[in-house]
Length: 275
Ligand SMILES: [Zn+2]
Ligand SMILES: [Zn+2]
Image (tube, rainbow, N blue to C red):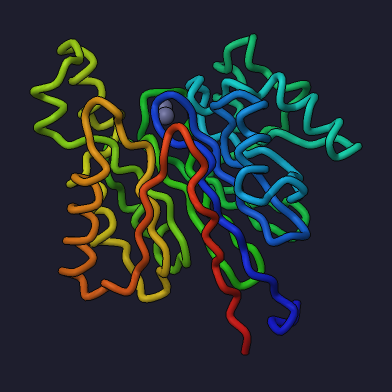
């Protein structure tokens, strides 16, 4: 495809956190949702709130079977088909499909494998393995024309694979789940604290910044801090950590946004390169 005809890509975190996750990526002619952990009504309302009422949804990409990622799949699959007037596939790994709670199962699902790229219209989708306490979780890297974006949440630690996958991205939503001191001093029972900070739990602010330091390349223009814990983190703490890291890396030009649980974030327009 000729780059002169590339379109800008809209990257919008509609909801982020342990009560539900959903992100929209599209270029006006094709689009996908990544996860659907808030209600169908909320997903469509929030899209409308940020001017994406008629934006195309050609598929839903599921990362793993936790209900904050897959909760709306059953209702949403019917609604999206009505909206589009055709079948809208839900993609997930076989492990995620097997473990998906019955009440969340979409009408039908397309099985994918981590490490095998596939296409949704002209969007190239690259699912890759992340360490999380479920059967076969993935994060996604998407190539839309010249623009690369990634959604990387729900992982217990940075890995070499994830580091490689965030290289070359234009925009990245990265988990900044908890501040380790707030988690340890906070209200959660000990077993839950242990789960969150384990190698298969969630990234602390510090771990997220380690991953960012290892994988940052000059292409990155937008960073979204995602999946913040409402009990064990604050937007200020996550933002302080991320901006400090970007400053240390000499990457202060990267625009940083904190994703929210209860509102859609302002859509990020990622510019296609025009040669
Ligand atoms: Zn989650
Ligand atoms: Zn999870």
